Image (spheres, rainbow, N blue to C red):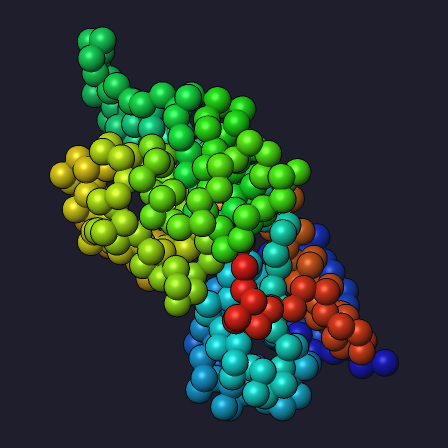
Length: 328
């Protein structure tokens, strides 16, 4: 029996790579990574499935040209903004993603960002690494304690709920805004705000956990920032495009916001260069899911989707219609 042809656009953990090589005839980029769109279209000729990442942009033009042999596209991600899912649907190509398995790792990073920003970790580490560390006076590098503070969570899906569990351990008070209120057994003592503006007004810390949709795109703009308490701290481990960079940078430079912890950026891996010079930012290169356990689970789930469709079964985690896309 001929092995199905799988186009793979990057490298994965050993366990995932072993499964790929064991079960498929694999096509990879001849010029290392990433594929150009034309290279990906060429590789897809006669292929059964594509295994991609957010670095691979599958737009309307791609789906106009992609080979009719492609039976499924699996993306190694929770987000699917890089895929024109409507164009895929018109070509009757199912698109699968990897929700749920990255929640705990991403929540860990959100807490790292929150603590790193609030305790001025970048400035402190810079002193150590540059050899500038000298005896500190009691008023130097003063940060902000998190215990007893209100953490506003914008988007109380799997990751938001995992962050809430962690933040309660630090003594934080949880408030959240979501398209719908959560059942009491899930929300616990978290306070619900139907209107995100009401959430902003009480959030001494604000952590973003919503998907990027037309409604959430550039959610955090100058108007939203003006509603936050003076000296609030922002955390974003969700999507860079939830934030208007110029507005956030202006608020950080003026002191309107005390600090920000960011793992995601609009246009990444390129980011607004003005973030780099700000001392009150704690910046990471989109490593929310970057643990061996999580990246392996994501890869395995993506391959479960491919296996299912190629064997005539429904994919376990198909991308939902855009109208039903929920929080991460």
